[in-house]
Image (cartoon, rainbow, N blue to C red):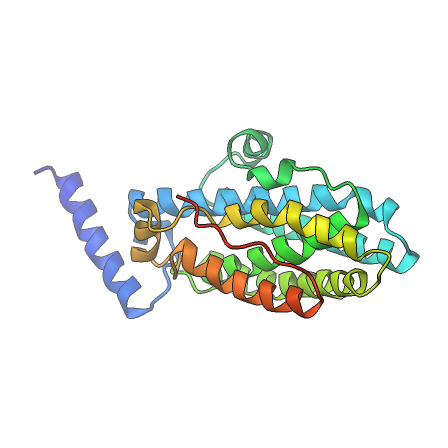
Length: 250
């Protein structure tokens, strides 16, 4: 057995001991290539999602129904771009050419939901309600992850994501309680629900098991999906809306 293989095995054992004890990993010297590869998969996907989310909201700075909402949308865009910047700065520490990555992400790493058109204000606030809540739950796992720099960055991002969620809640409730807009917001729910449901990914995959072993994720995809579904279902039904059934992605 080569010295390199022995060194990698020893590094793996030391790394796993730290992870199991709840200690955060802080330097590239502490982690194995496999840990780094899995960490980068998750961080790259999140980095692009932050920017893609911002791009979707940009037109609604102009198209929002009130001046207060134009400001609210501008602030959400600012937050999402700042979150993306923070994520790409974390990736830059790994020697990644982030400018090349930003160009590639939209083709290789972007979730399909971000390619869907946001045509109306009801579409916008329902996307906001469903997608930002989904992101909040996924970021919760990242905030508790074993990679210290990502964990600390996520703590602040997660707090701001839940502020975005409240914006969506306020408007979905308002539109659902108005007889003139209830049908429109119901249609928006039926359009966006299955698309956002898919962003959690497949349950019980080998990659998910690896993420959990390394404490890069704390829960299986479907566990997170079920928590999201329970919350959204209770709220939406309290607004008088009919919620689609949850679909397990096989």
